[in-house]
Image (cartoon, rainbow, N blue to C red):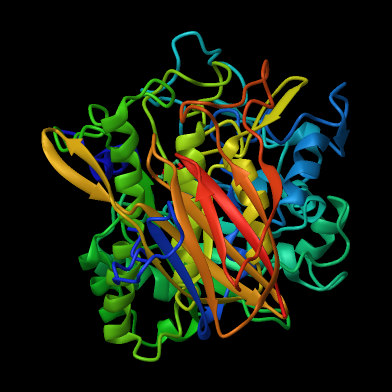
Length: 548
Ligand code: AHR
């Protein structure tokens, strides 16, 4: 039996749906949402809206990097349409170069004249998930290193995000970690590596603050035990130059809910916890088998052709994010009493069976339907309800891959429903998350014959000055839900809704039909100091309220 953990080993609730019995008054409304403005949770870090880019399939080559001499509109080799669209979502940080690829990557390969950069075998070359008709001799298999550190940092700058680099702990010595930092951040003219950076086109420091110390070190990142990883982490981070700014170091956290990994690491990390900013957590929603199997390949289902049980099972998996956050946070607090270390959910999203790749070379590429938009909304809402704990979260992965915002191939480009959710939710960034109580009938579905429930409505809210933003998902695939919405502690003056919905939750965008799923805006009437709003089936809604 292959679990996700062993696959990687060998390969190298809406809890806001508080069921308080709040009376509902509006005719037809059977749900109620109350935003408690006097109950702040924490500032919503823009880094909750972060992304992940790995040298995997069509993410980098074709997706982001098209080359300077391409006829595809580009900025210094970087696909123009992609950076422009990404910039509109206000990305926080962008994690690179992996993933599993990070622990085989030698950062020096991505420096120097591009024509002379070495070609290397990619980590994913032997993946069993390659589509049969994929060309296997391109940069997806044999990495050409055309996109290296400087090119990636430019990509981030163009898109308006901060670079977050994952350092190789499995196959490079600790010295190479701080030398990579030196290459990125040492002052202009100060070191041999600063001179190399200048000859690569960036005289001034790149000021990279976020650094991951390995990736999935329990699996493809080295098959370590938590105690062994703690020893490595201590060694790698014992001395790393800051060049005037604090480096935000992120430890390689558990596979899903493996609390022993977190407990084992935190109990052995000792003083090195003082230099740790974040603790990673990875959670994919992949098993749509409704408990029939836990086997990695057998449990996955199609991204587009799904039935009601599979639809709800993927959302059920996504709703596990909340207990994962609270349980991991609880264990972190056993050693880190003051909770100085934040959670960094630097890989999350849906992961389906192969078969819907936007083009054959897009390994792990999959379509993205309205189901994925709902998954995105409910996950971002979960992070915001825990804005005091979650310092960063990175959807996996940006383009042509798992849970992507974009598809890009040759001269074709389109955005997915997930993109629209990121664009809608950007309005929360930097605002104060406030407690939101939702009372709604639950969704019930048959899970391999057993009646199972999901939250009827789930969401989160934030306030910045006179602006309140409420985001809500309706996870039911076929029932709209009408809700009364009240804001406690502030007066509503005006409101408008942006809704992402479709007649069918299987709806998606493609190169041929790029605008099948798009958000729509409408003004809402505030009556008697409250709103009544109907949330369509399988939808994501943002309500922006002007406060008096
Ligand atoms: O996102 C694909 C892979 O999933 C990443 O490389 C790895 O970190 C995770 O297991």
